[in-house]
Length: 123
Figure 1 (cartoon, rainbow, N blue to C red):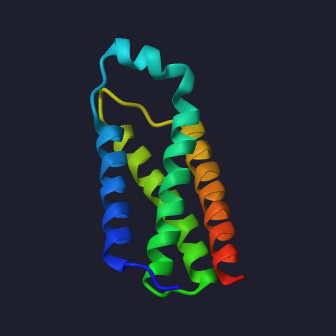
Figure 2: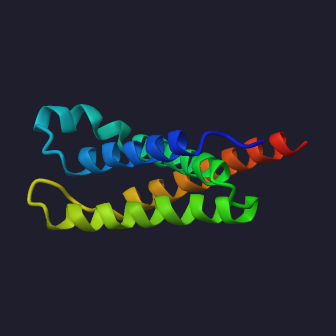
């Protein structure tokens, strides 16, 4: 089943931009304190959704299941590493290993969710 290619690619790119903006945004101490307990869960959810969107965009573009799933892991994980590197040089942000772990876990879960969708479509 072929889907609209441009829509998924645009949605995925737009969502990636949103994640990047949030990664460099100078949040106030009050906002950071409120987000603090949920930080790792938010990272996991952000990258889960990004990986799922990547699967959908790749499949809509006609990529094979294996290539789509590989891309759905590598792209969000690499993007997370890049953004943590950017945060490392910003004086008002910090890079954290546990953020990378949460990003990677989210990418794995999003890839798995995409896998389930692909398997369902192919039945």
